[in-house]
Amino acid sequence: MKAFYCDHFVLPLPPTHSFPMLKYRKLRERVIADGILDPGDLVEPRAVALDQLLLAHDAAYVADVIEGRLTSEQQRRIGFPWSAAMVERSRRSVGGTIAAARLALTDGAAVNLAGGTHHAFRDHGAGYCVFNDVAVAARVVQRDAVASGSTPPRIAVIDCDVHQGDGTAAIFQGDPSVFTVSLHGEKNFPFKKETSDLDIMLPDGARDDEYLGQLAAGVEEALRRQRPDLVFYLAGADPYEGDRLGRLKLTVEGLRARDRLVIERCEGIPIAACMGGGYCPDIDTIAEIHANTVRELSRAAAAVRS
Image (cartoon, rainbow, N blue to C red; front, side):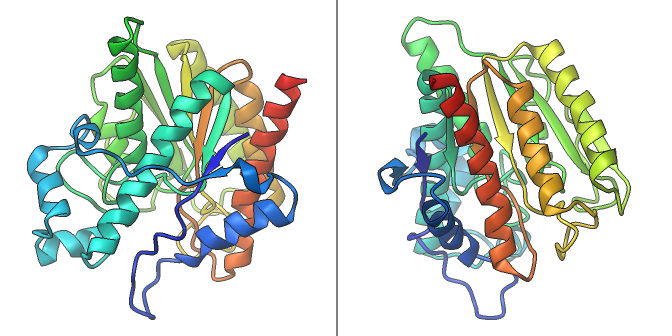
């Protein structure tokens, strides 16, 4: 299975910044050290092209990001100071999800070791998200299909980040070709929620069993209602019990069971995974949780090939 990585495109942040950029390099090193993937399975993605970004984002917003015209308020809302390196990193992260989606449609599964930037709306960024990688990738693969004379794929987005995928929900509002599912903390950020096709809201302190039961029902409903040709899976590490921003109580093994559940229920459907959030003070634990997602997806892909 191929994995796309861009951790060497580093977003420069002040030493006191709360975003754990190091987790991406730790994740890449972990999947190799644990034998989950071979070094040859790792691929540097191309940066998303501007015409691809415009499939999901307003032209004025894209230009403001690319050309460094974001206001201080826009930068505050995103949570990152603008820099040319921020732009390149954001474009590579979106490019990784595009590449994973395209490859999933031919190989059955692929993963972006970054991405999950689901708080980016059509006309603004928020919550450490500049561009919405899944929204752009979904539009790209649909456009690819039209260009080749095929029917655009029906898509399901299964978002298991602890924070609602509000930007994704808003971008696809009223579009029956993309079904959005968000399993998130009811009282967590964002405090003004959007409306996904299916929102599953969990109370603070929810543990493994409650989470997995709700997830199983949600995935079954999404697959029944959408019958997707492609699934995007956002595998956030932030439902973990030790996460600073999560407010849920899932264990590492519970999160691995979550990954296994989603991947097994989507058997036979191409799946492109990306990582989403993770804010545990122990960055090695974040890397372990994300590596388990890659492990479960790789295991399922190998079983299909055999």
